[in-house]
Image (tube, rainbow, N blue to C red):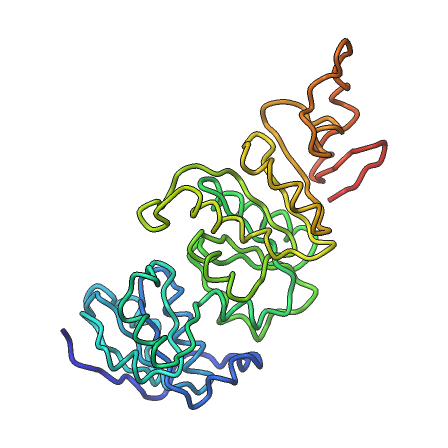
Length: 319
């Protein structure tokens, strides 16, 4: 286990807009970032908290050599490192612990110690959502979510300022001070992140789910538990929010009744067969007995040039 290191000193990075108000609660408090990692989230959280005036300790099972890139990204900030293993005191003496999504919280003895000591347990994505002033388009799914997130970001940028981040490997905490309410934020959200976000009772204003198939069952223990974590993307939506669901996935198609009962709008899409008005309302889409199917050109989701159009019940909505 490596000794602690303090890399405080003058920062050579350009000045940033001060963090948004929610970060103020960490000023002067001891915060442990559990899991620096190499994908940006841990570094983003540590930087955000250090700039907010927290006394930040970063701890990780990996040693400094393996984390060199992440440590370099935090150069000049008043951060204490405890690498190559975890120490109980970093959790028993902390006012708050920011836990990497990859950490299995119920199974972690160190997270348990922090809870017993009364520490706040949170995550990088939770810090962002608490402070973000802009609406969020969230994307999840067992596969296809990174591609869908990137494409959604590119499409939105044609119409208004937008930013892409989340599980795609980009922490947007650094950009919080520059985000305006009239922008859109596109986030790739993993099942681990959605599990954490349930503590905030938050779902994105526009939720997209690509598909559900067995994944991360070593962590979630069962398929129902995995699905339950994924469902957080729509579970806390408010009236007027929208859920975009894959009609070809029986699990996701089954979510629409609950989504609509909560006052949100469920929009289904399919690549296997035309979406008739009946299917868009949650029916089977099968033709009536003795009849023929509705012409697919009448009620469907389609592109008019670069614009996505929802046509249903004789009305068109350009999304």
